Length: 85
Image 1 (cartoon, rainbow, N blue to C red):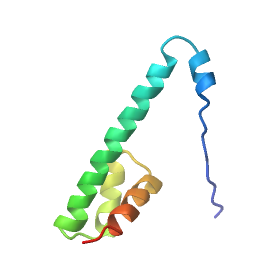
Image 2: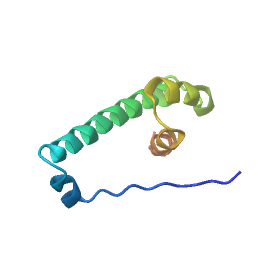
Image 3: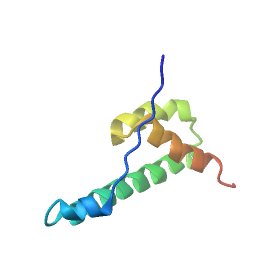
């Protein structure tokens, strides 16, 4: 099985030149993502550190419930698993 990594880069000038309000739309989109990931981080913290559940028990549910990718889940989980207790 081959593995691929994708990357997207945004150029502020291209966004601003796309038309009126494009920069504002991007800002709103990024804010929505930040709110979602903060919610995921908070809920995952509760599951791991308060309820003491294992990652493998909850990963699939988080992916489905929050509509995130496994990569996004893993990035939050790594941060939370390395917090001092």
